[in-house]
Image 1: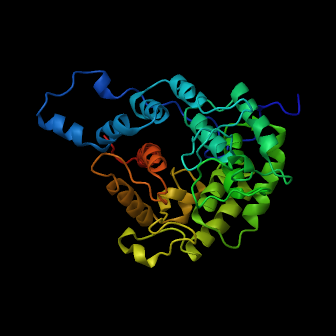
Image 2: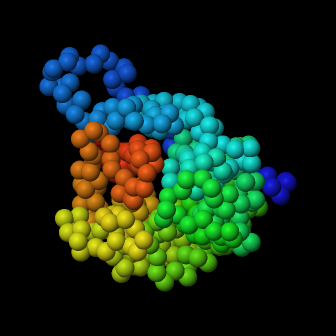
Length: 346
């Protein structure tokens, strides 16, 4: 086996969130029977359902990629068109650029773009094969000397970039960038030489955390939900959950936002909630919160849907295009989280 080849890991007993993503839902019933008569009570209820309102928002505002993702997740669409749309962001080096992650503009391949690409491939159960092998080769070339990924490489300099994203000449590896990528590769049982050092980096970074911020914690959760050593992951998650509660990194009562501080460097009102950490009830982060806390969090998420059918972007708005491009992706993820917890979306 070539050192840079990507192939399946030997089976070690999948963790709760490991393995390929389940097949998409069956087509929406509206595709199988005549729609209700316009003006009928059934028609009005269907039109006002969160999913129908979000669908209109997506078709009005989203990039082709998010349109294809919506169709796949909620209308029984094939994953092939998602892959085709994603290819528009792929570069010859195997990485991804072209504002796939809206806060980084320009064509240059960046680890944050590539992490987003892996999340999309995982979501449509296509995280494997030659495409993943090319991504792993890019990860090897983009890594810092410690084997971990910087969030942003110097190649971003000269292109429009969110002002809160630093671009430095010699960036070091970060858990924020490395955790999600390593976790998604483990989740899909991908083998590659890059993954060994990256996994060691993530373990060391997570187990030595004395303080953190929400996005770093979310990156750690993605890693812990999928890494094969389940007892170690459980112990690390328990410790991380205590840190989240002690540092008040999750809003436990959405009716009292003022009692929860916003992390340094975050935008005013950029709070994080239990559903941001435990996006799926099988996540290790679900145990950090009581049933009542999670129910309040999901109620808040459902109520956040705007009149236009989309969900808001809570992070800092620095330019019109990034904010507009981010909302459809946020909308799709909000709907997926609500559905994962059995909430009615229409």
